[in-house]
Length: 212
Image 1 (cartoon, rainbow, N blue to C red):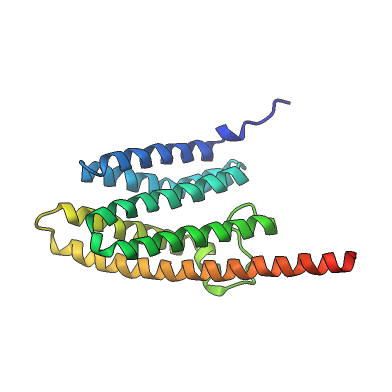
Image 2: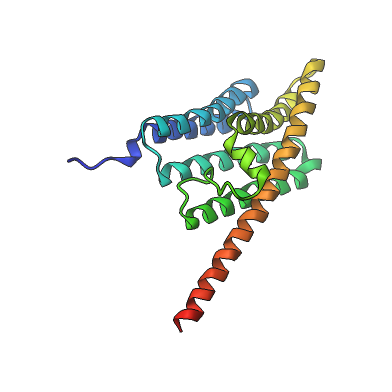
């Protein structure tokens, strides 16, 4: 039987497409705001399809989970870098957002992998109830992620619009609330993942003492 090529699994091909769209978005950001936002949001929306494809085709892989998480984090980080250039007075807040986003998700994914989970979206259901709802309710996860990305995209778009429509400000306010909620969940990610890692350290040290 021929060996499967994980690199060519359908969800991973979707992941590569997301990367290309994100890179195109970054390239267009300095000069073409609307095409840039279109490519960025299309890349983000495809994130909802790679997971479905992975489960439907039985192609869930650790590589795919890592690719998915890294694409999300790098895309948001690069958008925040651009926002820091457009809104220099808020650079510190953007930097804090980047640090929280990357550190919380990386530690959460690492702790999940060490515990044997195939994805950072697979958590212990006996754990934090907020994270349980966040990861087991697909509508909640979709709304939180979309609202967070829309908030940053609206900051970018509103900078380039001379007379924005009032509804854009209302939408930005709503997405801003979602962004704050998602940041709070990232703090929970960081805390619970740290607790998981410490629990694993304690268990390893206990086993080492018993082995002596």
